[in-house]
Length: 355
Image (cartoon, rainbow, N blue to C red; front, side):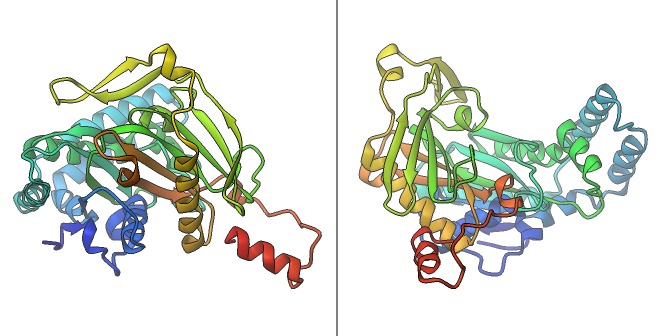
């Protein structure tokens, strides 16, 4: 049922341009095309976002708010951000877009055999997750959303996050104009995670591309990705796919579905689970192997969010949730290794690490 406003993730969308699906969803579609296990869902394209802004009055009000903003005034930027977000979140969604999103959500529920499937709605800006710019954390994600009306509200909320104070400040500082920006939204089945986290296909401490770092915590991975908990850390040799160091983190809290199935609950982790690694060795290796394969296809270091589902067996419960370019060490020139690029040793190293 893919169309102008909707692209079903399972369709793969070979020709979906980043300016249509945004950086985050472009990464998801690449994972689907590669045969990775990705939660089912759909993309609300940037054409839907543009349809909202066919209203000249809305464009004019946002323009007035931006013209009055002083980027050197943090409090004023917060005020401007809040005003624009209210305008966008409160604006009626064009009927054709609302119908398309509702139909896509109902089709997802039907495919999964469950009414009101809980989903995540993730912002996917057209200037996001590029190797030359880091917009990570500047736009919003809505988790454990249930029901068509709530999904429509979440999509509008994600659209409005194009104007968070952080995003406004970042674009001003880096000379990114507002003109031409767009926002797609990825809507995916939620994974009720036993364990989740992040994998980086280099060591973020020193940029070493021969290593993979896996960070993991109990429950959903948002607390790990946002730095709100101290996760377990696993350092893996990228060539041999062998863990070389494990550091058990404090993992004081976890994020889990609320008992009534509506929304999420942050709760303390009991002492017994805090004291032990939340991944088995074979699970660490599975994450590292998939991260290495994904990096090889992308041709550049990546940051990948993953989860093991609580209600599925470990062998079939692994899911890749997000994939984006690593934007810190990837921008820096790689130091000379002391081995000529044309030598046999360099060729072997290149083949084994995948880069």
